[in-house]
Image (tube, rainbow, N blue to C red; front, top):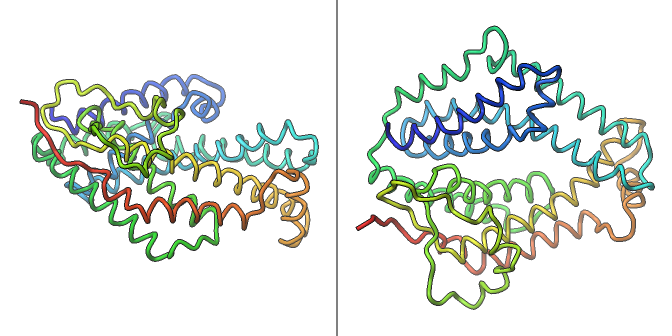
Length: 330
């Protein structure tokens, strides 16, 4: 079996096991959410994104849509449920706000249950996994060396697209979701691909690291299990990423995540207030800040903070130095 299809099969097997167990539950969608079904879906989506840029673009783009559809609904559940858990400990936040977020969580879980049946992931017509496996068996898989070289090119394209995204926005953020969250998504895929491809992407250590990277090399980042590459197994060819630049990428993803979550918390409360009554934007934002307290930064400040760390990071051309190149075992 070629390496590419084996990677898909590994995560499909994980997902299939979860789906089989979920099918026996009263609330399959809730069970999948609580049992981390989102992780294998992330990996499958990442693989589909990567291979659509390597070969059989149409085939893998269609597969990506299937994985993303399921992952997006799980993400929506996580969004509302996360804020329910966070805000439930804050006595300043009105019960009606919590109730609205709980209702949205239930609604998204129900949407997932419906999607599982409609898209053939579960139920009497559960053929989705078999259809995906058939599509994978018909793909034009590359030999290992050619595949790794294609991954190298794919990373270059992905990094260029991020640079274009930043260039077009000129590092002026006006929206948490379309600016901060979207940039973080693009950066995060660069760190997900190594986990998804099971060993053929490894980190390359340098004897001397550029001084400017030291601010990113925090203990939290350098010791994170997410920054440890999967075992190389029987791979003979590798794409090498510079370890310290990869750590810098991880730092950026984490910091943007904190700013994004803080901003989306304000937006979630605003949404709840406006769904419960006709409240103008300005008043809704004001109330959200009152509920969250003085330590909660305003949206404008969060956007400025995101701009600041991004400007520093991208001015240093850190992404351009992420990829070292390809290598082979001797």
